[in-house]
Image (cartoon, rainbow, N blue to C red):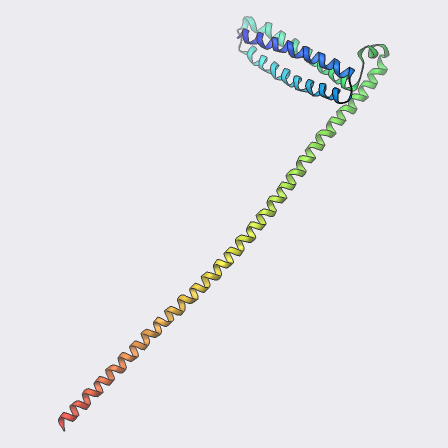
Length: 211
C-alpha cells in the first residue's frame, strides 16, 4: 500500500515540476505560444487533482501507524497545489512577482481587478457555452418535432387509404350477398311456379282420363 502511495508521490513531484516550468513560460510568452502553455497547465492541474484524490483514498486504508504521516504529506501537497494555482492565475494576468513586491498594495488592488475581470470573462464563456448548447438542443428538438409531424401525416394518409379500400371491399361483399339473396328468392319463386305447373298438368291428365 505504501509503495503505491510513494508512486503517487513521485508522479505528483513530476507533474508539479512541469506545472512550475509552464507557468514560467506563460509569464514570458504571448499569443499562440502562451495559449499552448495555458492548455498544458490546465490539463496537468486536472491530473494532479485526480492524483491527490487517489492518494486520499489510499491513505484512508493505511494502518494507524502510517496514516498520520501520509495525511500530513497529502495536506502539504494540497497547500502547494493551491499556491501553484495562484501563481498560474497571476501568470495568465501578466503579473510579475518581483514587481508585486515593490509596488505593494497598489499592485494587489490591480491584481484584484484583473482577477475579477478574469472571473467575469470565464463566467461569460461558460454562459456562452451553455447558451450554445441550449440553442443546439432547441434546433434538434425542432427537427425531431418536424419529422414526427411528417411521419404522422404519412400515417394518416395511409390509414385513410386503408379505410377507403375497406369501404370498397365491404360494398362489394354487400352486393355479392344481395345477389345471392336475390338468387335464392328467384329459385324459390321458380320452384313454386314449377310445382303449380306440375299440379296443373296432373289435374288436366286426371280430367282427360275421366272423360
